Length: 259
View 1: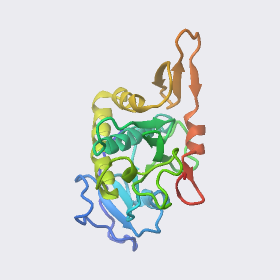
View 2: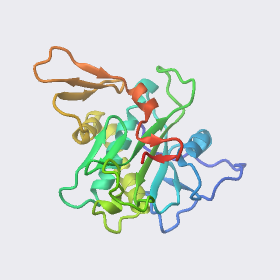
View 3: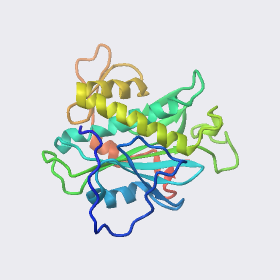
């Protein structure tokens, strides 16, 4: 996976949402921020601008109850292998939460892209690429989108134990901005490790967080999950493409994590 590197901006670039390095969101130098108002959709907007804005563009929606962002990447390998960038994004998102969590806080990834804190759903990640790209072709771009529920809007915290928010799980004054900044830093760490040492480190970081009982777990070259249970003769393969399409943690009606 190629490092995050910005393309030069064309002089005739059309109007777009304000790009800023505002002090409330501090990103590492390779990133360029595109900030949307609270009704924006970071994932869809990043997909629209990815062909022109290029790697390192991070779209952020300014909300206090939800850390919502999407990052544009430019892979240098065929799509069938480049999709594994999803695992780097999920590992970085889990690490971002761990940086602010209290000791003994349980942070799990549920295959492939749901994140839970103390068994309650807080959000997850998604991945997009240009439609029609063949598996053996290098995609022009990828977009990793993440959402983390920082505050509950239901007014009744704890009513549904299967969902939660950071404010309910001991994260104190951790804000959406904190989560996005931490994600960006951790994503750089995982991408650098991938480039220098191969995908094995990314896979290890992801699988250590994966909540699934028993078995030897690994990630195939095409991103599928492989599990061999103790005493089993065969390895069970779970299709990454189907799992990404389902994105069962995401509620398209509310455009947020399932409640």
